[in-house]
Length: 149
Image (cartoon, rainbow, N blue to C red; front, side, top):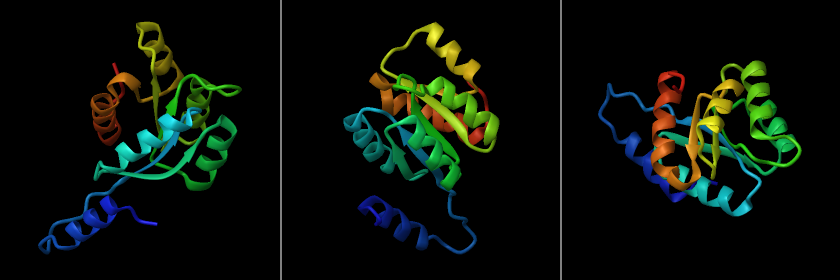
């Protein structure tokens, strides 16, 4: 079911003059064990015309099944989840599905956590307290393919 934002975006791009190409939307799966944060994050992401949230997952096992089935461009995932944490899943996804870029997120933000994100193979980090700003920067890195420093 298309959201109102998707309908507006689709009708807007359909009216572009001939010769302009439609921007490819980043097919995104969002993974977080907090149902509330997951819903809010997905709603915010759908406001971005470059992002298409194709699925969401609340558990690591569910994330693996979803990534295997849908092969997204981006997996935006919480670091701290029970059973399978974001670091383990990031390592798995980046080694098994190199075309799927992983961005990790957390309500915690320390140099050690950011270093662990890089070591797991994640392309970026989003601090949940600054979700909008940090996600924009991470999305630019994902679209350009530049690793986080």
